[in-house]
View 1: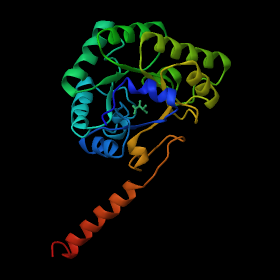
View 2 (view 1 turned 30 degrees about the vertical axis):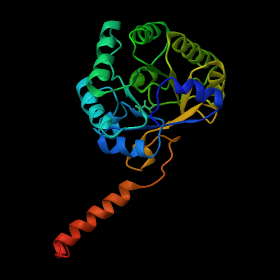
View 3 (view 1 turned 60 degrees about the vertical axis):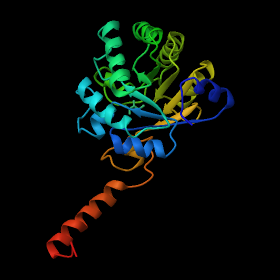
Length: 259
Ligand code: KIV
């Protein structure tokens, strides 16, 4: 079954949890899709996990487009969502429309994800949705604002900060987004947001009360050097990969390969 954006409203009502995995190329897209993810997200975390940047900020639109096109070729069943990179949608609404439109036209995205809330971003989301572009919001820890928030830290810890995030989430829903990522916020806050909104909340480091969960596939597969405390490593492919590659090097030197 191919996943479509309208299914998420039914799934929320039915209490059917949504599984989301990230991808950054053909192979990771295929792994996430074959694993049965409901959404494959080409997250801008690819800047760090696939390109070796320290943050998501240096990632260019063209780099993102290139990776999204590759991931698209590996995805048949899941809804295919692509992050808009830093500064490709924040300057003005027409810039956001152009960036989102290119992701749909050139990379086959079925929706785009944008970070941040409140009035300005809500207006952008509204314009995108009015043009037929489904949008996923993202509040809490928004990595594109790492310099403003002083690191990759948990957000919404004080009552004022929690209320601000709740209001942002409400504004994003009102603007027409079909779902929203809640990153690294207290579980109780994520529960309140999930109960308040009719759209699907996707948590990462936001506890168990969200409508769905997302993890960065490189963390799931144990491919990243560093991973956040809330991630779960299901297998250590980096260690297995280095062992296999080392074995190959040794076999070549000892002439055990080829036979
Ligand atoms: O960039 C990304 O991978 C993300 C997910 C962690 C939600 O935004």
